[in-house]
Image (cartoon, rainbow, N blue to C red; front, side, top):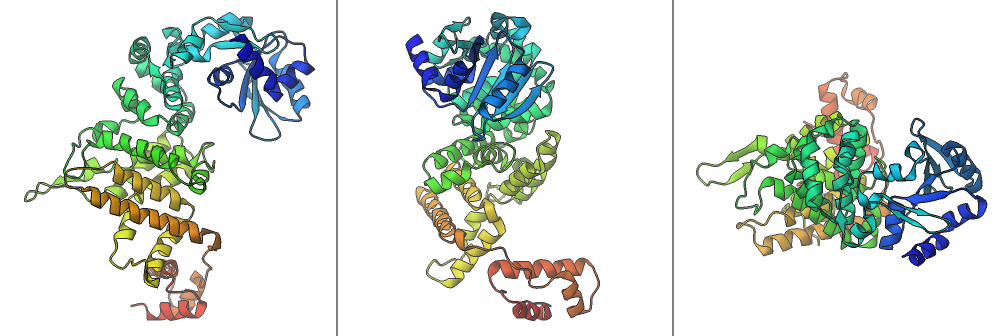
Length: 473
């Protein structure tokens, strides 16, 4: 074991540079050690410096690596060094109460409580974390650590989502005991852990297990409504499990996508995490409008959810605002929920004929409306389709829908590099002069109509825009 760890430290250019430059007693802990033991690449290195003030040592590392110094927590002396590549970083702290043993015993999970001396490769494992990693098990250290920081309850499932490990019965019992404390941490910390959870490969597994301990309903009370909508002829799962299955399907679609699609979903455009993580959160919430729009037709017995996409999108805004999601995160999730049926509607429209120019116009209009979210929206639509396989849904229907959505995505990828922003052919002032009208609701309707005509490609020049405005009823 020590040979393995020694080789990992020696081959780590950043840790090797630290050991060459300083004589301090330094331990690497947490995810870095877990990465060593699981042979996974890690870009963050958590280190505990024993014999020097963490701030002073962090400033020395800043100079050594020509990096950026970020104080994360002055009270608990936690400092981050962001290296010039902006990918690798080092978190530096001192041990709790000056004791490495006390520090490790106060952590959340055994797999995060392993320390390694970066000079000698000595492993300090007081809680059996190495064994739990080998057994792919998530185990808590002390239930009082959940009381000290209840966010650790959520971290249990965040690590299950990212690692796929199983929870021990004792850990599940401890979560159930303290689940009501999850509201104590700042919502920003909860959101950070949630996004990491949804970014994990096994997010669907974590969500199901969170539900078993009532944690999911504590964070998302709307889950109670999802559970009340049963399976029907179009859905083989109840609404809650359909929502979780949608998350699973998004992950599978991502894994089996082209590199171009993967790179798009791996982009970090808002919220400090990937589009994929936010898309899976949107996938989990995409049908929250169904309970309040649910009707059962008397003559057919069919379950209907008219305008559930609009209702759900509107419901998501206060839900996410209360959790202090950023405006960009909310806008993205709102758009995904509102438009999750849209791409399938586009491709099932009778006027869409791939052999005609009109078919391309319909697809281009969709692309113009969704802008940078085309790929995301198509992936969600595919995941939604694959998650609904009731008795009225044949394999042929599913295959036809997925094939059409794939064609829409292929068309987008073929034209996206040639797309330019739509020009402003006429502004509001010009329209008012042309029609001799004043600012009003009517003006807004006219401008929207002109924009829709541009989206469809029916209007491409200023002359056409003037003609369009003059011919409006």
